[in-house]
Length: 218
Image (cartoon, rainbow, N blue to C red; front, top):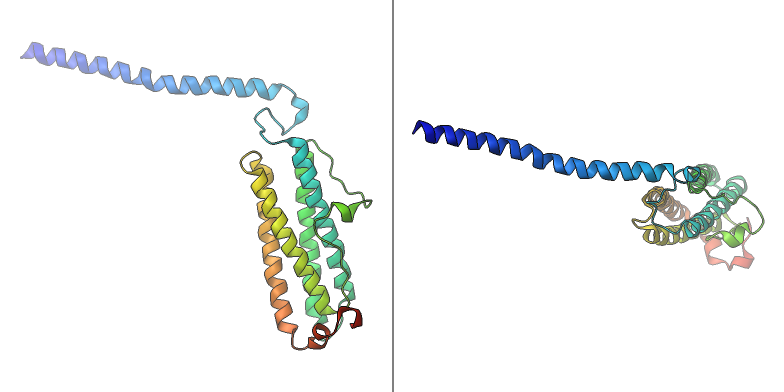
């Protein structure tokens, strides 16, 4: 019996020796992957954040982001004009909202420009062709209601186009996707705020909504 127990104890010790060896195999394989990652990181170091693991079409992504950048810049300009041109009984509150949106759109533009440079691209701030690159339009509007409506239309366009960009990026460029997701969430907030503004002054500005666009004046 003592011999059997001793043998069983020896077998237990042997089993204990086997288990750590098996556990060490996995870290060993992972470490080999780490070494490969380190090797790749040293190659083409001038590319910065763009590594061999980047799956998207970099040039295509830069082009798309530059279109989003143009969209944000046009929105900044439109909101700025509306801020200064707002008039009427509700003008001050709406003008403040326009200014807040303009500042937030500028932050969006900065985020996009920063991401473009991280991809080793060049953010296009050129005024030449800005409206052609932009997804949304620069529409001045004749009345306060017109301004709010045009801004709401622009926000809805941005929501749709940014949603498409996010789907396109998918898992191939998760960093750019997260940037656009953050911006999209803010654009959705803008749209809701503008909808609320439009509803709140619809009665007071009814004469502008009932007249044809060409017959409206500020």
